[in-house]
Image (cartoon, rainbow, N blue to C red; front, side):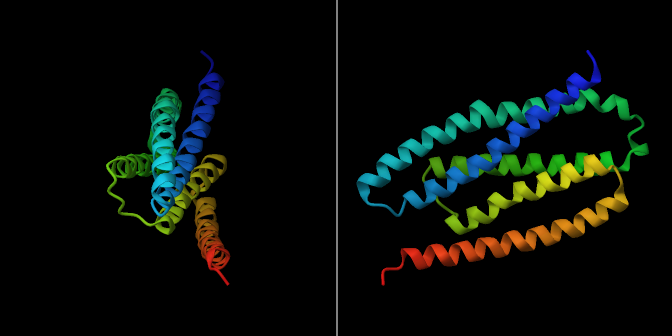
Length: 182
């Protein structure tokens, strides 16, 4: 099969993997916030969130993760020796860290389903942005294939992280102001 087919499939499953990671943490936030609702609302919402989380995690996110890795590894022989492609080494390190992030989301899912709520919705909102940082880093690295440009990319990434953090704080402040009765 032509390399471009593997590349296309890899990109498709990277996209669905990230979609799953973005949405699962968003569901965690809603799940966590449902705990503060009335007894009836809480039961209905949490039961529904558990179904949605389980279906997303095992039906989309895990399969996409596995297929992303398989299609990515199927193309690696085209870059041998790998030491001739330092951008790829860094990308593989970032993918490993992304996989660890994926596993940590699975841990959060397990804890939520056991009703061991160790995270606030604000902590989960911040955690949700970690996937964005991985996405930006990996895409820029793959497109630019240059460590010097990656340095500029990392500078941009730190700027993006700062902007995301400020956005989260502003959103939280506005949300709290809306929820506070006058």
